[in-house]
Length: 268
Image (cartoon, rainbow, N blue to C red; front, side):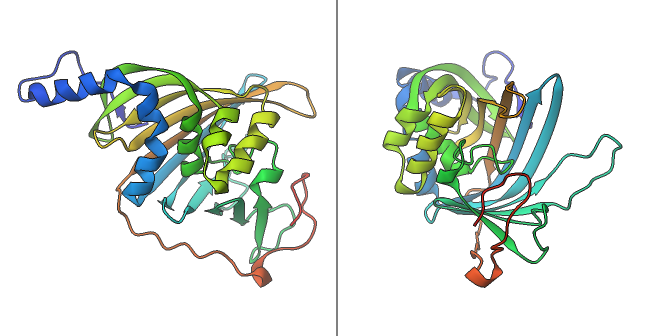
């Protein structure tokens, strides 16, 4: 995923500056992670890449997405590509997702929804708070989950996409994150705390020297309602090109599908 592990000690030229940053990174890893969402808000915006891998019954499925996100307005747009079918052909066109406080909008959703219509889903009405339902985790919701970090350790310095970062590994609690989350994410994280098999979320976070998240890998577990089997989901978010322009316009009410959606999806 674009991760290049640094080799041993710093080469000549790294100097004492990197060592000082390492020292600060080891003193309060939990605090650095608690502040990560606020640092993103201060950064304004970025481009984003997402990957969601689901494993159940020995089968692995990966869904990928790319887009942009405005952390101050809490608005984002992702193009999500579903995996190929077993025959190697793609059955679905890419899904366009608009992320907003408390809501997810999807176009090219399928399941009987007209191609020119959007589906609107209240994230708090989903048992996972839309941390996995849309095939991508809202980047700001992923960052706010770190507000619930209970334990964390500093692993060391490495690189993500050519940028030096600090690698942290820890566990966050969804209920604790919900208590500290912004108004737009509070209800969704509360739903996820109740809906997942466990409220504990192991993670690996990679922050640059400004404290901005460059890569975040979170591992969720939920129980498949039909098969009663535990499904493991690994969600990875990559953030880059901070300050990139973001123009997200939410659909008007006339463009939102009001009919019944197949596959037991929530109605609008």
